[in-house]
Length: 301
Image 1: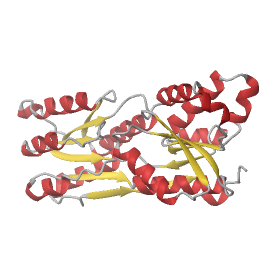
Image 2 (image 1 turned 135 degrees about the horizontal axis):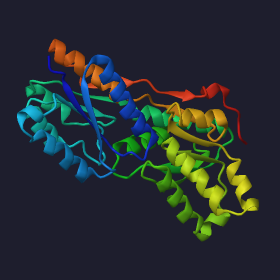
Image 3 (image 1 turned 90 degrees about the vertical axis):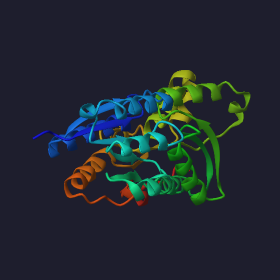
Image 4 (image 1 turned 180 degrees about the vertical axis):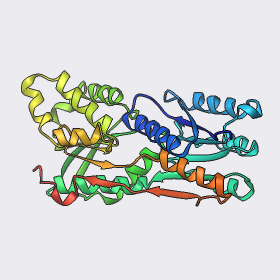
C-alpha cells in the first residue's frame, strides 16, 4: 500500500524553533507511517509561494496528499491554498490566523485547518513575566519579529494589552534569527541616545533574538560598559528543549514562554482526517506556558 505523502514548508533553517518544527514533523510522520518531505523557504515569502505552487502544479502522481505550511510572509498564501485544495491536496496552516480557511472549508473535499499557539496569549504570558521581574516598573528593550508577521503583531498585541503603565518599551526589529537581533542591537548602540537610555530587562519575541541581543552587548561593548547589560534579565519565547529551555537552565535567559511545535500535531490531525474522512476543527490550539512558572520569578529591581 502506498504511503501517504506530506510536504512540510517551513520559514528558515536559521531558527531553532523552525528546526524543532522539522523534527516534530519527521518524528510524527515516522510514527504514523507517512512519507514526509520538509523544505525551507530561506525566510522569503515569494520563494516559499513559488516552491509550494510548483509542487501543487506537478504531475498528479508526484503531488503530496497534504501540505503543512508555516508562512514566511504577511499572508498565508490563499491563492496557493485554493490551488492545492482544488487539486485534492489537504492544507494545514501553522502559527497563522488565515482568514480564508473558513471560506475554503465550505467547498473543500479534503481537510483544511490551522494549528497554532494562541499568539496573543503568548504575548500576555511574556508581559506577566516582565511584570513579575519588574514589579516597580522599568524600561524594556523589546525585540520584535518582522513587521509583516502576524505572529509578531499578535505577540505585541498581547504584551501591550497586559502591560502596566509603569513599564516602558524601546522597540527594535529582528527577523526571528539570532544574527538579525545582533545586527539590530549593534545599530542601536551606535545612536547617541543609547548612552542616556537605562534598560532594566531585554525581551525578545523569540529566544534566538534574545540571545542575539545578549551577544551584541557582549561583543561590542567594553568590559566596564558590558557588565550592567549582561546582568539584566533576558527573556524570550519558544522554549525549544535544546536551546531556549537549556538557556534558561544555564542562566543565559531568565525565562521563556514554551510554545510546543505545531507541525507534529498538524500531521497527526491530517492523518486521522484522511483516514476517517472527518475534517478537524478550523482552529486548533497548542498549549503554551511560562518556564519557569511566573510565581517563581524573583524581582530584578
